[in-house]
Image 1 (cartoon, rainbow, N blue to C red):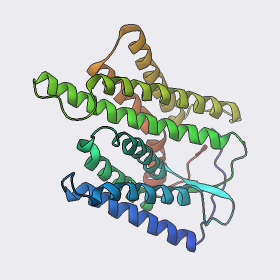
Image 2 (image 1 turned 45 degrees about the horizontal axis):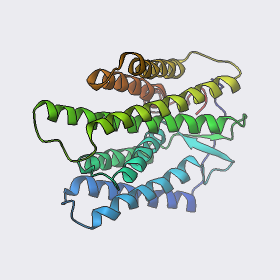
Image 3 (image 1 turned 90 degrees about the horizontal axis):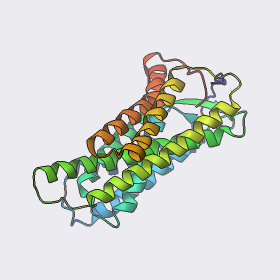
Image 4 (image 1 turned 45 degrees about the vertical axis):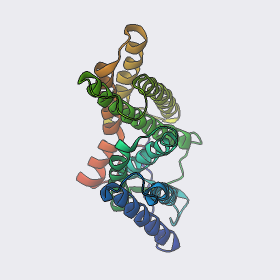
Length: 278
């Protein structure tokens, strides 16, 4: 990938205050939903989770958008990437929960989102000026979109495994989506994620002067191969059930390590600027 541009220095002021307020509101709301354990009939959780989602979205806009920097640019790292991924997963959850009951995952998603917000608040990443290539922002957006789509696919796969386990034990079918619908949605999100990831990789290759097989690139391509192999296995061999979800979990883990993992090592463990693009 391209060499890292010089880091920028953030300025204190209204942007920093707004970011702190939005992050605190999201963190408190998510933690309340995740830890309170109130009954689904209570009214306030119904609006508290959307409120947390709005606050987190505002915090991500302020943080990743680079508001308050001395020069035009952006600010990004492993923690904002995780926070954005959870935010996109919650976006799909809030839409689906309007049509089918998904209360079993609400608390888990709220707690994961709270952890992601706290990480993004603690590790805001590195500040970078505007990219030289006009295609770079689209490359980053497609990469983030693939993270979110695969995150949603993993969520549906976990629900599918849970439903299959209950059926094997001859228990009553759990409330929520039917098993076949969960399976269909899982593979639809995987397919959409593979398309977004493919475009992101192609764009990154097209505007990068010197392509390097670093850890991030290698893990991303391996993740793409695993997830593409999953779709081929589904199409040709009819893979389903736990075999399919194992491939999905493996591919998603490789993608998580490709960006978030390598940037965590660089930013937190080694405490130095990462080489390459966002």
